[in-house]
Amino acid sequence: MAAPSFAQLDEQPIKRFHWLAIFTTGMGVFTDGYDLSSIGIVLPLVLASFGVAKVSSIQGAGLAGSALVGAAIGALLFGFLAQGGRKKFYGIDVTLMAIAAIAQIFVGSLWALIAVRFVLGIGVGADYVLSPTIMAEHANRRDRGRKIGIGFGVMWSSGALAAALLTLILERAGVGPGMVWRIVLAFGAVPALSVLYLRRKMPETARFLARLADDQEGAAAVVQRVSGEPAALLPSKDDRPFGAVFAQHAGPIFATALLWMVFDIVAYSGTLFGPSLIAKGLGLSATTFSIGMSVLFGLPGDLVAALMLIDWLGRKPLQGYGFLGAGIMLTLFAGLHESVLAAPGLGFVLYGLYTLALRGPNIVSGTGILGVELAPTRVRTIGQAISVAGGRIGASLTAFLFPLIFARTGVVGAIYTMAGFSILGAILTRVLIPETAGRSLEELNRDVGVATVKAAAE
Image (cartoon, rainbow, N blue to C red):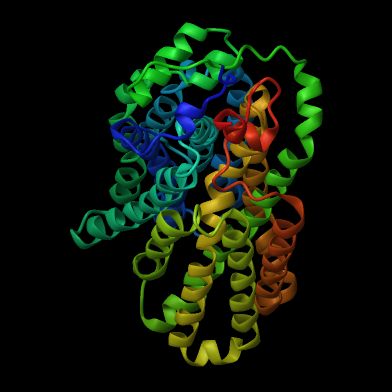
C-alpha cells in the first residue's frame, strides 16, 4: 500500500488550474508593485500640491516608509490568522489595498496620506504572506519556482512599470499635476478589485485541509480538482506542538528573513540613487529613465530568471551569482564615478547591468519563495510572515537610513555600502540555505507523517 503523500499534486504538469492560480495571485502582486512604486514616482507632485517646498526628514521617511512599515505589520498579523485557513482571508488583502488606494484621492494633507498608505501597506503585507503560500501549496514540485517567479516577481515588476507608464501618459496628456498624482495612486484599486471574485473562489489548499484542518474529505476534493483524478491516501493531521515545530525550523526561517532584508536594502537604495545620478545627465526625466530601465533590463531579466533559470539552475546559484554580479556593477559604478558623471551613457549601462544581475535575487528572495519552501505546513504562514517582515524592515531601513549614509559618506561611499551588502547577500546565500528546486515541500522540511515523493514512488 502506498504511503500517504501529496505526490498527486507534486507530479502534476501545469494545467488550467495552475494558470488561473498564477493570474489570481499575480494580479494582487501586480497591485503590490504598483502601489509601492507609484508614490516614489509622483512624490514631487504630491509635495507641490500641498505647497511643500522641502519635505522634512520625518515627513520624507513617513511618505517613503509608511506602506513598508504597514506591510511588515500586515504580514505578521495575517501570517498568524492564516494558520486558521489560507482561503478564509484571501480577498481581504486586495480589498484593503483597493479601499486605501481610493482613499488617497480625498486626503487633505501629507500626514493623512501617510496614514492611508500605512493601511494600504497592511493589505500588501497580507498579500505577501497569502499569495506565495497558496501558490506553493497548490503547485507541482518541478514548476513551483516558475509559477511563483511569474506570479510574484514578474507581476510585481509589471505593476511598477504600469505606474510609471500611467504617470507619463497623464503628464503628456496635459492633466494637471494635482490630478495626476491622485489618479495614479487611486488607480491601484483597479487591479486589486479585478481579482477579488477569483480570490474568494480559490479553493483552500489540500495541504492546509489535511495537515491543519483535519478535513481529509475536503483535501481529497481539492486534489481531485487539481489533478483530475480521485485522490490517493493523503497525510493525516499534524498534531505536533506548534512551538516544537517552529523551533526545529527556526534557523532556515530566520535565514530567509535575513536574505530578504539584504535584498531589499540593495534594491530599494538603488531606486534612490539611479535616476537622480544618471537620468538628468541623459536629458531624461526620472519617470522616463525608470521606464527605459524596466523595459530594457528589469522585465526581460525577470522573465528569463522566472521562466528558465529558477527551476533549472536552482535558487542558490540564481540568487548567489545575482548578488555577486550586482555587487561588482555597484563597485564599478562607485569606482568610475567621475567617468559616470562625464559620460552618463556609461552610468546607464552599469546601472542597467546592476538591475539585470539583481533579477536573480528578485525572483528568489524578492518573491518570498524561500519562506514558503523552508517552513512545513504546520508553521508555514508564520514562517512566511517572518520572512516578509525581514524584507519590509530592510526596505524601511533603506528609506530611513540611506539618506543619512548618503549625507555622511557622499554618493561614492553610499554606493560602496550597497556593493558591500550585495556581496554579503551572495555569501549568506551560499552558507545559510539549502537548494530547494525540484523537491517537494514535505521532503524539504522532513514533514513528520508525510512520505517524500521518492519514498512514495518506492
